[in-house]
Image (tube, rainbow, N blue to C red; front, side, top):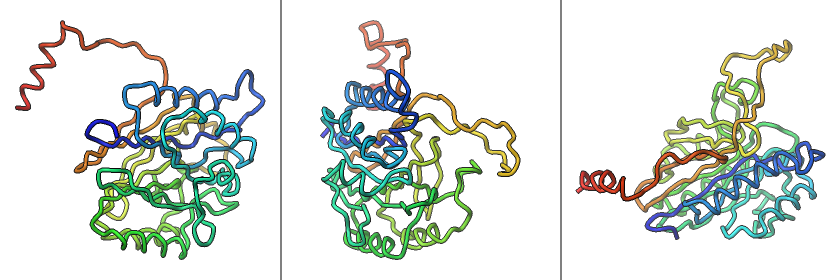
Length: 289
């Protein structure tokens, strides 16, 4: 455990296997490697690492094998999840610690420490880009929430159940799976937050009265364009950009959950805690007394 708080890192939408012929290494593996290096060698090494779906681009064994090889020396326990670009079979082969539940869904519950419960949901429907949450999964989630109605809970899922305004990535308003999930979560005050991936951008909103965040991707990001799109008229708009890979760290201290986001890349340090700045730091702490 890290200090007096639990740190839960989230990396999402890595898309290993996209443009695999790039040399010397495919772009997404390079971005994944840089993000993982920052996570492990930086000052905020987490207690858990959630990979919240679209770990691969095609769900194939080779891409999962590359992922596992890169993670081989990772000292952080990993919670892998399935996204719409993955396959359940591929994920199970790469991460045998995931045990499929009844019906074959890859959802599970983890004790994160300091009284925090993590629920990882499976929103995959084979052949569909958007999310899914059937009656069986709704019943499973309702039962898990009923088991611990007073325990602080954090939910991870790949697909955001909201319309964010990025037209070509969004679900249709009021899709059945979204309505079904809303019904299960409404009034569940123990759920502190929902954190998702899929949209490749940082987004903050709420769902069923619960704070909802979307963590940006490790793979190249989706361009921020909130204007409507006509699927029949190619308008030369930007779709994907080379903005830096990003990850989240969700900090739980036993009372409050706070989410931080950092880009992985090179930057210049403009100040360090040296004797010259000691007075400033001490003064800031003095204000808290």
